[in-house]
Image (cartoon, rainbow, N blue to C red; front, top):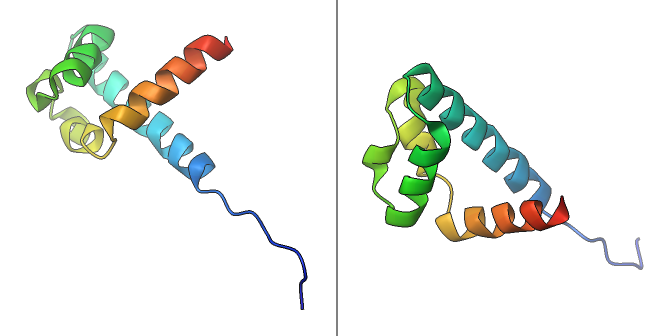
Length: 81
């Protein structure tokens, strides 16, 4: 029997998945000749999935990420560096 409380976090898994998705989307956009940063920013601001190519299933992948969580993580990472 354990007397203490164990802390369980899913944030790390979510962060890893978010990074994988963003990297995949970035690479797919670059492969198709787009400016990945501009396209991803356009998607974040408008939530219009047509900013993201279907190449490598990127459009479906990006829609798995909550935009608010993505923005929070981007700001967090920006300020950490």
